[in-house]
Amino acid sequence: MGRAGFTHPILKLVAVAQAVADGDLSRRANLTHRDEIGKLGRAFDTATVRIQGLLEQQARAAGERQAILQSIADGVLAVDTEERIVVINPAARMLLEQHAENLLGRSISTLRISDENPLLTAGLSEVVQQVREELTDEARLITEHQVSLGKRIVRIRSAPTLVGDEQTGAVIIIQDVTRAVELDQAKSEFIAIASHELRTPLASLKGFVDVFLMSGTSNLNESQRMFLDTIKRQTDNLTMLVNDLIEMARLEQGTQRVERRWVSVAAMVETVLSSLTGLVERRNVQLDVSVQEDLPAVWIDNLHLRLMLANLISNAIKYVYNGGQVSVRAYTIDDPALLPSPSFELEWQHTDETSLLVVVEDNGVGIREADQDKVFMRFFRSENPLSVEVGGTGLGLAITYSLVALHECQIGFQSKEGEGTCFWIRIPITRIDSLAEDHHEDGTVVYPSIAM
Image (cartoon, rainbow, N blue to C red; front, side, top):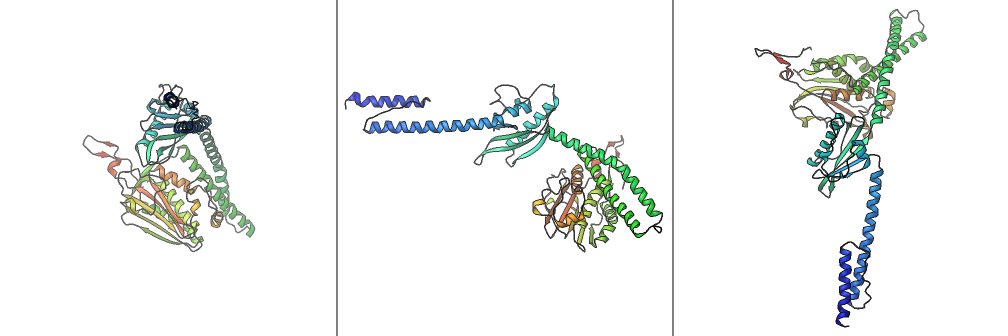
């Protein structure tokens, strides 16, 4: 082979390699020589074909992902560690009302609009803040909350994006829940209106039955007395249901009145237990009460505290077998590690860890492990036989949880099916100095009205 015959295929291979490097994957060397240069050319062509195939495959996959991202109903927004937008789909643009072009690569802080819609601006600020928290807090996993964007209410879920153990940014999913929230509000309003409308006829019916019973039953036969007792019992049950529905509606709508005062927990426990004496006797329950001496009073709505304790204690009494045991304890703690179990979702909102704990424990049927995430849901009822026998609305624990949250307390429980359940409420111990409303010129302090 002459010099030209030797250099020509090499020059051709170099030219093809340069074209491929520049992005033209259609080029081939097509060398037919049987020597090493020919083998090199054919190997190069084979590698180019494979690279072209892989790139086409990646392009198809990227196109499919992009099509999914473009058509998905939920908004998707992703940023890198420098807060630059790397993904934003049409749904996210629409929900966040971002119509500017070329948002990719821009800082998430550019998600702003004019002052014409302050609710949207405030909502966008919440979205930006949640993304920043995902980027700065390595311990955060998936978080979720609702945000009002003016015309719409959205649920946003955010999470860090990870490549191996390295965080590369954050992603946020934006779901329009406006219709669901509106339906839930309409349902709550209907329940509240219907419950209020039922109150008057129920009160009248109960009054008539009480008059009959107080006037004497000597002129009634056994069947008539039984009918009256049944009417009274069922009227009382229906009244309790209506009261629970009204209470739940108030809590959901934010119209629940809160009248805080100094309340003795020891006295409240005694009052609640006294009101449940009949239930204790009917179920032949052994009651063990232990209240720490000199227990401090707490700054709370006394009716709400009574309802919280009544729900927990009455539940314990109802869900033990005949002759079972229920323990009620009240004492102070200064270390959250002493809590009987972890708090159920609610974080402690106070700098002082010293608090008052009310613990209600029973040796009853317990709660199935599969049901334990649902116990504070509205209308939830366990499927065990005793639950069916006991009856009820399934609102007691939901109301208790809402009241606990309203007063910035904590609640938790632990349970084992067949062995029993332990519920607890942790109440902050408020120092009276922190409740000062005003100061006189002479330095004396004016406190809110205090009642025991």
